[in-house]
Amino acid sequence: MTTSGPDAGETSGTTETGRRAPARRAAGIYGLIVTASVLATGGPSLPVLPLAIAVFVTLLVYWLAEEYAELVEHTSAGHLPTWAHTTSLMRAKWPMVTASYIPLLIMVLARLLGSTTSTAALLALIGTVLLLMLSAWRAGRSAGLTGLAQGGMTVVAGALGIVMILLKIGLGHWH
Image 1 (cartoon, rainbow, N blue to C red):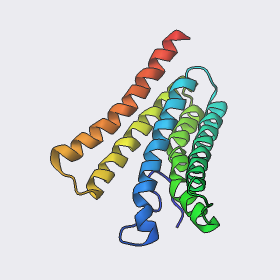
Image 2: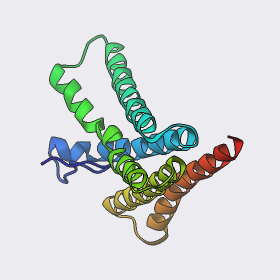
Image 3: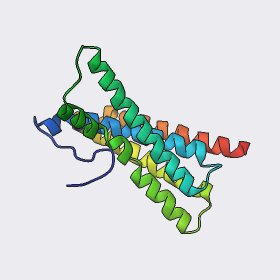
Image 4: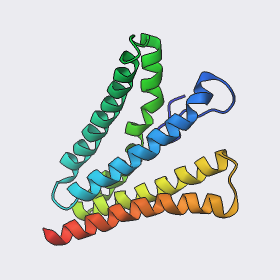
């Protein structure tokens, strides 16, 4: 099964994949926030294709940097992790990159349908906020949260995205 998005590949239970689900979800949320920040800062000045490339490459660098930091952490214990362990960790954090797929698709489609680059980036940011809120809601539900706790988790995720939208709008006025 091949899926994308912040919760891609999650399963429940006690399998290795099931234990990696929280890491996958966290990586996806982190990827969405990085996606939003690049869209916000590059959206006012870059054309769509360079902006999409900037988002993707930035996420690849963050993903590789995080995996490298884990490798360094293991070496501080006096040994390298096995290749199987390393690739398992890398797969678990890959949603950091795949989380950008839907926002980037929104941006490209909006531009192809005639939106300005800035509007396309804004629409992608709005999509990112909705994905952040969905991811937080799913995380809260998975943790057994209900009511105010689950609502609060969802609202905080949305607020992070809204900060990015405000940043984009503010930067757009400086251009």
